[in-house]
Length: 69
Image 1 (cartoon, rainbow, N blue to C red):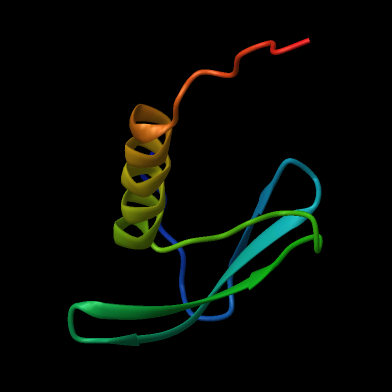
Image 2: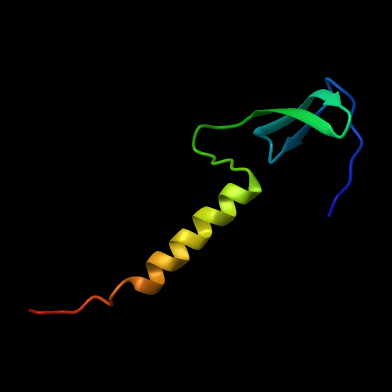
């Protein structure tokens, strides 16, 4: 894991097209601003994990395709 120190108003650039900016810090919480291309998906970790679990459940319950030709 990479650890970085940023102050309010400072940013990180990821892959030349994603910018993450520290907007606010209050106690143990921070507010981040993100600028990214429209084809990039961004999820909170708990939402991403739920989506992945749902996809895995769907895949496990799907019946294999058959050729009836």
